[in-house]
Amino acid sequence: MTQSAAELYEAWSRKSLEHALSEVPGYASWRALDPGPHTPIDARYAALPTLTKQALRDHFPHGFIPGNRDFDQGMASGEIELAQTSGSTEDRVTLIFHSPWWEASEQASWQLNRHARLLATGSHPEAVLASPLCVGPGYAPHPQAMKTRILGRHLYLNEKINPATWTSGDIRRMADELASYQPVVLEADPAYLSFFARRALALNLELYQPRLIFLTYSFPSRLYHRRIRSAFSAPIASSYGSTETGHVFLQCEAGRLHQNVAHCRVDFQPWAPRWNRPDHGRMLVTVFHNPWFSVLRFDIGDIACLDTRGPCPCGRRDGLTLSSIAGRTKDVTFTPEGLPVTVDDLDDALSGIEGLEGWQLDHLQPAAYHLRLLHEGQKNLTLPQHCRERLAAVYGPAAVITVEPGDALKHEPSGKFRFARTFFPVDHDALWRNRP
Ligand SMILES: [Zn+2]
Image (cartoon, rainbow, N blue to C red; front, side, top):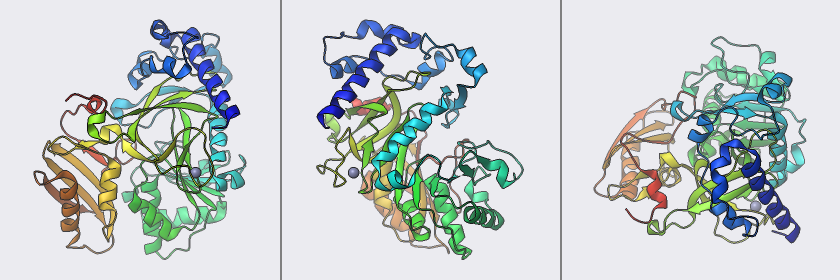
């Protein structure tokens, strides 16, 4: 970081910590753990616990509102609203959402990508393609007119929870709406946009081309990326964050993810040394400027992979640089010998396979794995065998691997797709413990 950027980052880090500990009731029990103002700021942060979704739930609604704010007044004036995160049922959380804060965090992130900086003005038209349970005016069981799906500068294209249920009529309608709305930016869940691209190509539709595509909401599989690239020519950038934290990383034009240092602090906690992957770890996010909702050391639940290739060619040096987000922590599976395998490891192993459109892995028992695969066009008889071989190389000779070709993947209640699921108790905290 330049000296002034580093000083600002440190000042915001200090202010956020001291404000949370002194003004926010949910952190009352943390106060005694703070070594105090004469200790370097990184050490003060390191001495504190992490904020969990469970704590957010336990202290709702007043726990994380600063003492000088009034929840009822904020709701009545419309300054805040309630937002539900789009996790699966057991980790859904209701949050206090302050729109100006969210928009400021988004605008700050645009500085991290050359195309976004040029094209995103804050008033530019944008189309969104994702689960209607994650974003937009809300799910409606019957088709809604296009104008009822436009909120502000955003058009929400999709109305269905599973893209496998899209009809050809749905694909044509969304293509027509894109052409008439002419968004500068298209923001999409990569699974949804990949399905849309595949179906639109099969229908020989000529697609309107936005000038920039943001992928967000879920892991951007290489297979989805490839399919999206076959239909769209715009630059593609991954945007990473959450409802709790706002916009935390944006992928630059050179393909690396840069931290949104004007908006948040990120503490990286590497996996324990015994795993021999010091570039892998979790992210604890502290939000700098949300007057209504104090977020300190929130474990955002994904695995970050630090970029170790040296300075990014784009020239940005501030904060952390990641080569990728490697998937959800709870989607980390283990080999029969107990070695961790991330969603990114699996995607890397499977993505070179010709004809594969998508995948999902169920880890059924410690040595039993079941892969659902989505194939391109006609049934390809060699595809399951190729997939089995790649997975055997990842999980080793003791793994029992079954493969099931199909037309659809299984979605979560929110409409999002998880890449890996485990069907027996797994202690993911072991990734940060150096003893078995
Ligand atoms: Zn860069």
